[in-house]
Image (cartoon, rainbow, N blue to C red; front, side, top):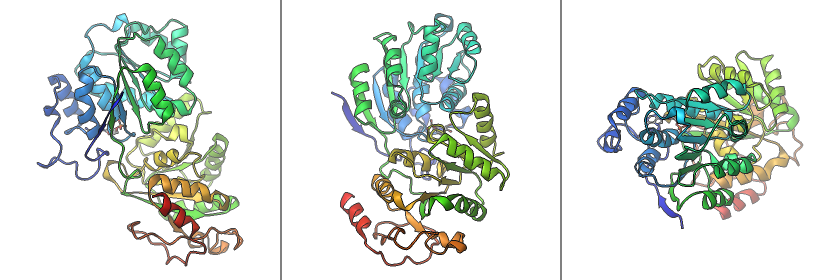
Length: 448
Ligand code: AMP
């Protein structure tokens, strides 16, 4: 039976309050870490462990199997990278990797590899990222030259196994990062094949934003009495993020997007769309109106995706139009705005999308475009995040469409009264008209 521990403290490492005051968390020196790791942490500018790191590192150092419920932005990568680096046997890279991290997307593979490289400062270790969209030959050469840690997407790891360019015989630690996402996008068979080829005596760490039954089953099957550490935030979407929605007919969404970007002048924004085609189309149309716009989705060549991501990271792009799979793991601190051009298919995607802003304790704002037919989907999101999104009037931005955003009176969604517990600071929307039916509010209140 898995033992459940509820973690205390702030789930987000970067929120105000995690400073170096005497009441803050103890410094990294309080953890049983080697001088070389402490020096690397100092060089990285990490003064204090985040709650995920403080909870996970000591147990992972003891070789336990752990399931950590934690989202990106909580410092989860360092939480597994630090104990892995500490536990590596030196000068063994020629004998094959000792640790393997499986991740759902190529971007995350690069991000995780870079975090490892940063934290491995002062050590002679080789970290190799293997992911699709890049020539397999170069990765094979890197593996042949010696790797201590392999970070990869399951599909590409399997390719390497089939070509015998990668051996898992020496694996001592496996990490399944963003396990829920890997299962969502159908990696289960690949993950199982890979895990079956790892030595049974290994340590397995699983990180996941949510632990639904499929993740639970995977853990039961492939982990040894894992201890569960719950670092999920109590309020799912951080409270520094203001969250609004517009009810808009699909036909006018693009116009609304243009007007919103022109008014908001975001430092950096991600516009989320549901499909790759939709992403591409919105990006093309937007590029005719604004500079510094690009798209990122799974159909683009890897080198294009890499270039787009580094330009976004460097602040050279203002607006990134993205699909969920690729946009989910983006960790860029300058993102001030999230615009859900399409309502996400899954509630969890809403949480992940919105979590791209408000990072490092900054303020963020999220706008969701909802068509009249998508009312129930909005309600599900609100139930998931335990909070009502505040309605904004389309008429403010597109006066020609009138207050109902081009919708006939009958199609416009009734506006709920805000329950007293919902406080959205700094909201500047006009006074809310009286609710027409109030059914949605009753439904949400019942569910809360
Ligand atoms: P992650 O949740 O692993 O995606 O990490 C989110 C961000 O937090 C990354 O940019 C890390 O470099 C940064 N980070 C991780 N741990 C710490 C720490 N202890 N102090 C400050 N920043 C950190």
